[in-house]
Length: 447
View 1 (cartoon, rainbow, N blue to C red):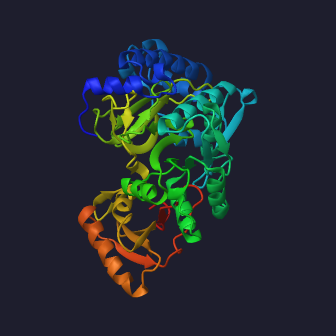
View 2: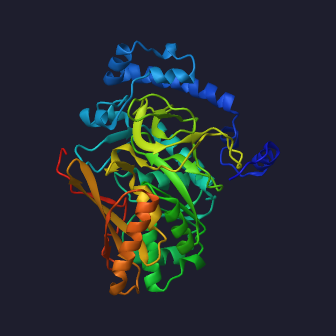
View 3: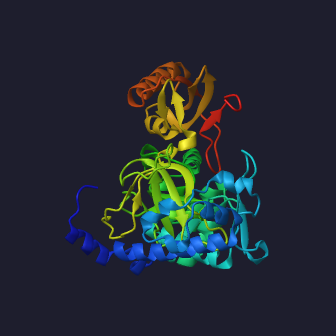
């Protein structure tokens, strides 16, 4: 973004169109006071109503009254996804399930699903935050919002839906799938905003191009994408093929769902809504806090959740944060784009690699489409990766070897690892209607 003077920032803040201006531009000192008050209330609520939290807080000899500053959050024990699974289904709820308004859950593909609950007040707070999030991304009252996030137990679809309604927008609740029909609805209903996973947005673009539909000439102007890590190269590909400003949205069901943090139109980091969440970055190995600006694991404490208060939840997402004021005028801290998950990190011949680093090399390379998978196998004590990339339409098969060599070379020079590359024909890489499966893990279980 470059340096921006305080005069320019203040002028932008005065002229900007905020959804909740008093909150979004609150002075950081006042924001910290609000966070501390809400942190004490959350710790008290968790200690009084959740057996696990009460036992851990007692073991750590920490009470809500002991929290004198936000730095004291470091005295609180961590919470992890394993805690949710170990106390399945309702063991971390702070309210009786019969008093709640809704339940969501993960797919449970790696074990028991993680179950999250919402009181009626939680749902109202979520809708408010998603309205703020959509507005920050560029959506406005009266816009037609094409919502291609999956509806159901996944929080993306309903979270976006109720936020859009709270904003005063017109929601098209199409969910995922039936891509050809989605394109007709986008063009016929003149949607201005597209909400989807970035991988599915590219799938929509691909089918539209096959149909001879140029989405760049449609009414779409804003794309709000999330639910999976994606690279700057992927952003540029989406913007070029659909003609939208592609905005990154971050959330996770354990904390709330979508709407925890979002980019503004500056696209210079995701504003984390600090009036409802307390953000930390820690060393994923030691658990110790890291200075502002250093990359580490994101930890979030909820400040207003009633049904499922989360104390220092370890997201496993790797990012950096800054409290430097944004040119948009918002004072809430910014997270850099999620680099990947600490548990998704691969060790390839001694080099630590995240799938998003490989994606950044692949997307936009000549001769290949922006669809890929990484096949991970165990070679001795290290991981070995085969990159499966898809040739762009019209590329002759006798050129596949040259493409594979080009990909191998650039991954080696830019990421620093040696890989095997397989070039597949157009359409061979599986398309996703929700979160893309970027890694096929063929390593022995428990390896």
